Length: 350
Image (cartoon, rainbow, N blue to C red; front, side, top):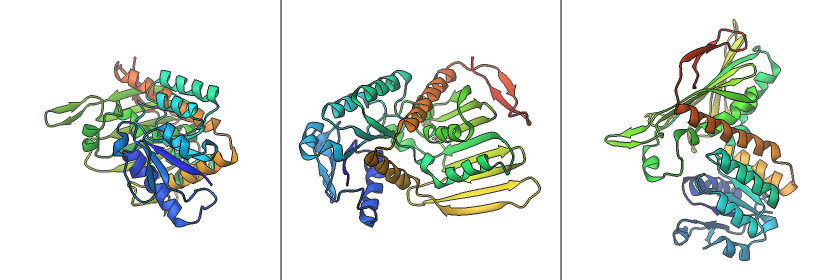
């Protein structure tokens, strides 16, 4: 059984990680994974503000946590903003903690990723980066559609991730741009379904609330060129509605997928059809974050390799870093064929 230490008590740490862990522990079906002892919590920005609630035990420092935990039987959830990770990882390693789940994205720039990977190799850290969309039942079904080929070859992926995020953006500067909020989820899925890619173009807009302007936190768009397909991801944090939609175009059909839009509704929807045939519509449970934590706790307990997941998470940060750079230097439009079928008009940067 694994003890748990959660570092960072904002929306991710308490609203997502602890909320899911509390539900899994209360269900009583995973007693082989979760020690019933209280979960230790630490807010590195304000240790005195750590909540005192049933199931939680606040500590003032990683050093104090070390006196209460056995590192080899502890999973650390590092939920601080992505701009504040490396120093805490070094402190955790020095205290003997090696098994760490890091909230996405791993970092917000290439150099920070390189430093984290160097530290992981030197200290033999076992890092897992939160990627619920990759553990999603919906992603698994999309993967099967691509692999089985009944709809033909994958031609393009179009992702729309929209949600109103004005209040949190005004209160929290932990994410430098809109590229760092929602796209890390879908970019990993695009790489899973279509393989590695290079950036074709990127755009970034500010968030405007009355006379207030938050640079780079409005609308983000990037286009990727895979070997046989293109991907387009659009994320708007100023929209009045929520949407998590992925549309796959194949040479002989189409699939439209909707990921669950909120933490209180764990159902996905999938519509797909082959040209000339009736559409299939499925609605099914998809509690992706719970599935991710269960899979990751088992992998950390059993010694399962995590390197491929870490490489994918690192590649996501690299491509998002390319997008941020490209968004600062727009260029002329260009037409790129999608797997030889139809084509898509994209704007190349530079």
